[in-house]
Image (cartoon, rainbow, N blue to C red; front, side, top):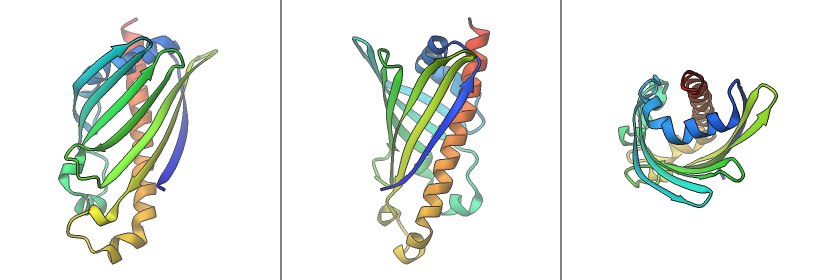
Length: 176
């Protein structure tokens, strides 16, 4: 069991526009985000009210030096598989290292709800790190700090998701 976080973000843009921008324009928007080097769509499948997207993310920023020294560079590239369900306006996702190392696993959902000011985006995620799969680090060193690492990384992911939400709203409002 990993570390869980939930974050609600109020976005001043219509729910459908925010939803479609997240789902369809994230690859274009990604290049404007400081922590993102690139986002590449590997697969997109549409069936009924659902769109399944598989993206490859390469990230770079906001990782403290102490943790950066522990985390292998290949962990900065991950696979994101997301199911966008138009009927519920919920995007369920799973993320894992692109190299298949299994060092961590993240799952969650983004819930898009309408309110009087536009959209409430609720981000729920759970991150689990598997220290026994981190090469070159003795378990007696990593296990005592594992929960702190999961907590820190999860909070950083939530912060990055919030920053992404703000960029999405700016993009959505410019492209009405």
